Length: 253
Image 1 (cartoon, helix red, strand yellow):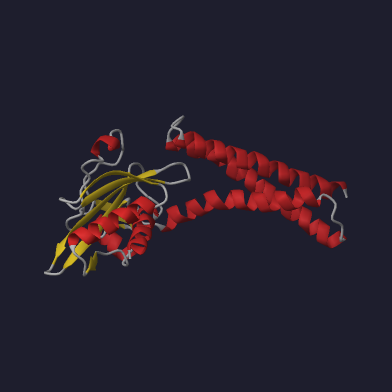
Image 2: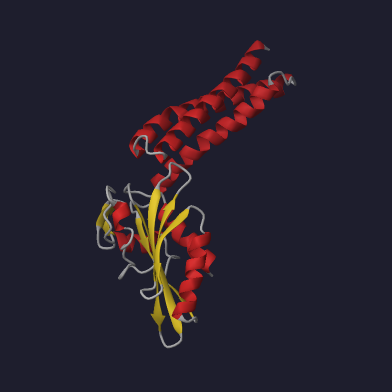
């Protein structure tokens, strides 16, 4: 009986401490108190605590079901559920890191990707340069592959969006869509050049990707929209930039 209650309290305590460590790691990185690598170092004990909390929670619920005794249920229920969620978030990121190709620059146009212009001053200090990585060689599955080819293989659905709209109509539609995107901060827009540039910040660790959208005439009646998203830091974006591009293309339809 005492062991059951102890397991419930242990699970809840590990959940609280793990969640607190995770919030400190994420918010501290977002606030630029430390860099991303330091944030990950702080996050490590949060994962360990969450796993211990999950195990203790499973011990509690197993004992509770076996004995038909709900002792410690308040601590046990919140501890188990909270610990599982706290562990899932970073472990899922690790899963994405393992299964994602080691690229961080995604474009619908892999031959003439939209360039960063107004965003260049904001990228000062970024470990990833502003130039498009399409022809950069990366190691993947035991062989070297160009980033553009690897993107086509990993994300075949990401491609240019052409529409039967006048360039000006599509540009302002693209601009209004960009304004509605969660976490985006529009840096510049110019109808004459057809360029829209924005910084997209993730809620988790505040990682920033720079986004360039280009609208230009296509054919006699239509216009073509291309979008590019690139991380400022990190080699493997865990699919984040592909998600940014997908979400925007879906929203702009």
